[in-house]
Image (cartoon, rainbow, N blue to C red; front, side, top):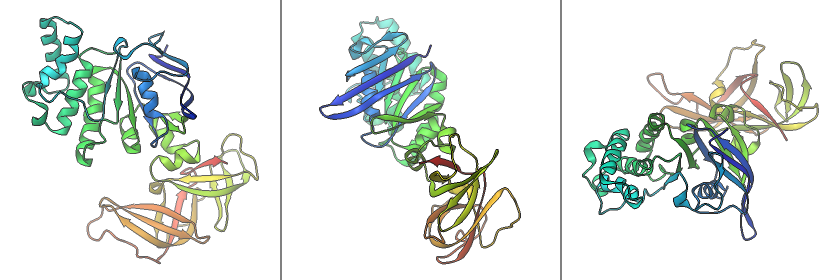
Length: 362
């Protein structure tokens, strides 16, 4: 049995349905992420797991027990908030010990458990410091240590990295992955940052308008999105509107209006004449002034450079096809010398393998 099961949960605020018949499960030891834009229902769902909100209907089953209606302090669950909520007048050790004191744990056991959890989060040398003497990343680790000291079955994290700068956020992502492996506690993590979700998670539930749009491993969601919303929300993605022209055993042909025919992998339930879109990630597309032809596994189209965006490690080129459709492609800036290979209005050729894209039925 899964550690956590959310069964057909609904939460409304007046006429607005924040969570709409959501069902999912989380395994013990899993790093599970709720991902979606603002207002999608992810934070409301997390608050129901914590006990700060109660579902209007449905069950939240933790370790086989329905905890819907159980107050937060009675649940084996702790939450790390975005602002960390540390007590500024307490030292690191005192902040971590606070929930144990509230639970009337003995002084010797408090000392032992605080020492253990400080070692887990690698902050032993900072035990006597105050929060204002710590970096943002260190304060986050204190907040996590305070949540872990009661040995919860489930740790909830509500966008804990969103206030950090980009470099520190990347460092803390690695810290969180290592910490979760070391302590072995199940994490349920809420974020709107797609890159963060892909980097951290064992599985991701992408939410939209109060519902789970897709629940899969990060690589599956990225490479095989089930809807236009998921494809567009997760990273950069080209969405090429097309109609199915023919279906074979290992590939099918789709007509991209005004551009031509492309081959792609067949999808379940597809029928000739059905419309949809071909999803293509920019890094899967080759770009050149000319590209070698003759490979039966490659799709080739011509266009012209519409714009470019230099990002340091890569340059994004936006190429306009014959029908006016814009396609993003990416070239790494790995070679010495100049980083910009094409200028606006340069004629170019695009190519990608037939299995590089994924067709989504309308």
